[in-house]
Length: 508
Ligand SMILES: Cc1cc2nc3c(=O)[nH]c(=O)nc-3n(C[C@H](O)[C@H](O)[C@H](O)COP(=O)(O)OP(=O)(O)OC[C@H]3O[C@@H](n4cnc5c(N)ncnc54)[C@H](O)[C@@H]3O)c2cc1C
Image 1 (cartoon, rainbow, N blue to C red):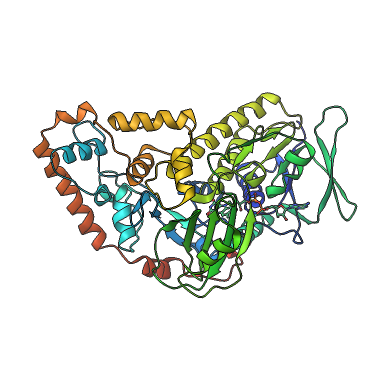
Image 2 (image 1 turned 120 degrees about the horizontal axis):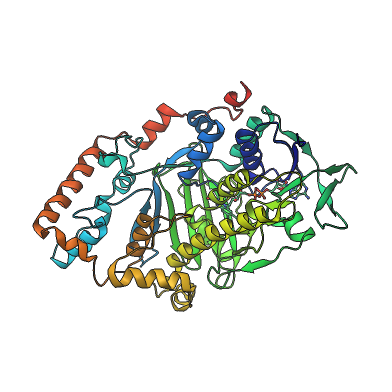
């Protein structure tokens, strides 16, 4: 029998600890052993607090209990993201985790919505989304498991404290055999013939060898970038934001079951409500505003008292041409960066881990596995990239340079094709892999102010009077059910009130 694969993870941020948790949670100890090196002196990026519903599948698969994790990371529920001032000033829409209405007469709901508008019934699309109605009313409850019910048509994710989440996963991993080494990697040694990573050297002088190395060292990309020089594809011409200022403030104002993203002069501001504080940040393009002005705008728009000075982070949009090269797999910020507008980074970490587990190599790596991993990750990155660019490009704002630049810029052909498909007849491309599904594209197309000239011809199969009747019924049913849901604050207080961050479940 072949010896188990010795995995060395460099980095103990969200990526490093999620990778360790995924490996020990999904693979048996006979397949691999896991050792993680992290440096408290260097620390983590410490942001990354809004997630997507897919995280729940990951947690379930590795055996994390929701209430326990939520209590110890002071988490709240998230039904989607509100975009304020994005399409035009003074307008807002919610991109929910869920569908609008239900198919009518064989056509997707939004086609009937477009058709109703042509017949003089200009409904607000948001009135047909259960998640939006709950979010706008500050309510939350778990989706129904009965797929016949309208209350089954949404999903949810979390807002959580990123540092506590990494700490939570660390205890979870250590209780399952992951070996943690505190230390700073000062050198990466490559095998002279294969060019693979042979070992990493710590400042203490210790040499750590392994079969498979995961580069989770964040923006530094110590292995994949510095040592292996895997190329970088730059996307900043489409996504020009390259800085963020982050600051927590006291919990105050609404306790929203959604993230808020407010477009500002040269970027956007996030608001993420946690149980013990609210996370805030201004993501901006340094070629359109300087950091001092951005900090002023951020500090002038907090709900509660700031708990610290704003912290500046630098980045640029893009990704590694090969995240898996030889025996090194980059996960997290070391593999690429897409701004947090749609909370996609932790999702990308999760997909990388799941793909790695599926394609898990022997002690000698077959290059075909790396090729397949890179192909899958390319698809994921490019789909998210297009979706993010859409938010910037389809804007009707004329008050600031960034917005004029983004409206005029040439977008990737793949996005141009999606916009044309939608504006012609309301169609949305369907694909199996990757984010985002049609309801997401619909929310953002319509929220940003794009309209389709025609609708799906199948929609005409049902008389318009019947369609209007069904639409009225769906809208009323959502409103009535949402009115009976608990308030988000009440449910959090009941279900997962903040607790000491030490994860008792993981220690048990
Ligand atoms: C402004 C901003 C907002 C974000 N918001 C979101 C969000 O809402 N949702 C979301 O999903 N994602 C978000 N992200 C992304 C998210 O923060 C990251 O994907 C996530 O934190 C993973 O980071 P990481 O583990 O790759 O890197 P890091 O957290 O930077 O961890 C790197 C690790 O490597 C270690 N390390 C580095 N060099 C060495 C060395 N020489 N020796 C030993 N150890 C070393 C560090 O000590 C650390 O442990 C955001 C990112 C930014 C910049």
